Image 1 (cartoon, rainbow, N blue to C red):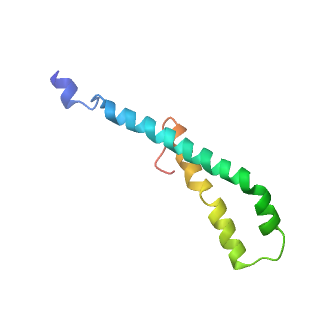
Image 2: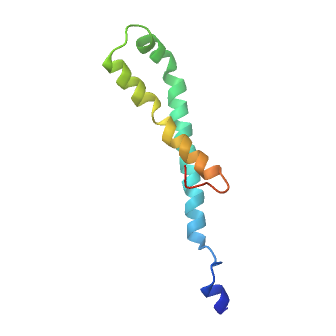
Image 3: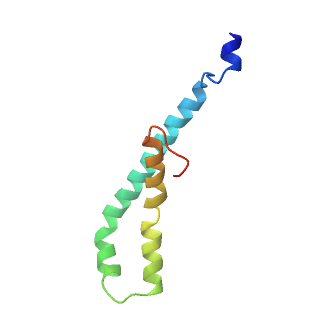
Length: 88
């Protein structure tokens, strides 16, 4: 028993495991919601923003529209890797 407590192989609390699973589900749900919103409004985006000259407001729109994919994709990638490295 003393070896188990003093060793590096301590049991992981159930709350941590449940929290990790909930975090994964929430990440997938956020990504699904963003993809759904993107697909629903794509026709309006093409009609209003893809046609016409480049402007700062257009650049801000595209940044605001497509940037959320990056952190959520990275979070999904890190959660699905078995042993993610510190480099990510």
